[in-house]
Image (tube, rainbow, N blue to C red; front, top):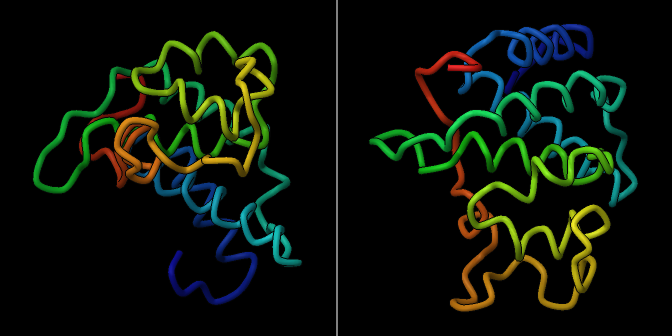
Length: 154
């Protein structure tokens, strides 16, 4: 996915990872979805936006798993971090309980997912920071990086 030979190759690789059944691969696809979506803020185009319904289904599945344990190549909760980041702009009201139950998600919910969780503020005003420490929210939510080695639903 880092150096596809064209749009069709990129989309094929994206869908292969997304539907692979492996947590790490799905997490990588979800991260690419979020990165692609982030480009739209700067006038870019998300080439994977068309897969939002599939991304939402896979992200929900990752959130139903326990948080990934930390090891040499995985940050604790990486599966949840990838899922939450991908869901940030596509989650539906029905996802609120699933999102709210994730450990450490409250402050992040007040930022990007606040419309679902009834948070106090939206993007801006302190978002991206963990309230107590001021560290970046990516780590405050559920870690960062990818979960490895466990199939989806395991």
